[in-house]
Length: 156
Image 1 (cartoon, helix red, strand yellow):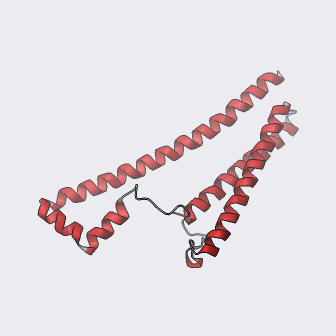
Image 2 (image 1 turned 135 degrees about the horizontal axis):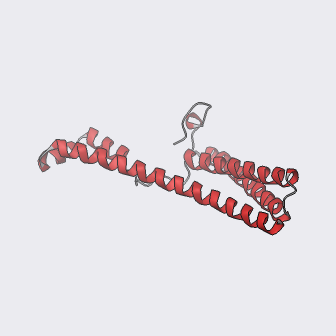
Image 3 (image 1 turned 120 degrees about the vertical axis):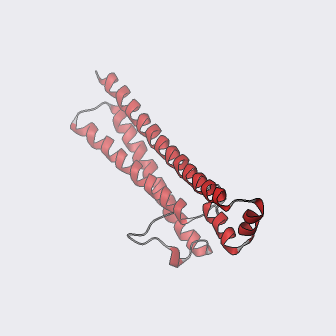
């Protein structure tokens, strides 16, 4: 019976990770599709090629392209990257603590405890990495103090 519990816990763990990755990919696909549809509708309304070129050459057209292109490369160190690392660190730490607690209450097999400690270690490592990244990026001027995250603000 213990082997079955260990197998099911491993399947549940990796299934959860796969589900989180699938949700993230689907979200990005939906955002790209919405941006594409919005650009397509605007370009259809503009009409001729000359009008389109005039619009794209204007200040508003350049701002539109800068804002609406989803694959525009961003700097390697943005506040969103730091925030994303922090969120994954919290998720991994919480899941690890859950595994450890569940193994004590339900006298689970040893692999459940090991999985819990691996998750906690990974989560703490991600949290430390995000903290170090944030401090270094602020020190180097990549992230300005004015753009620092505050409660209630959106991380992009």
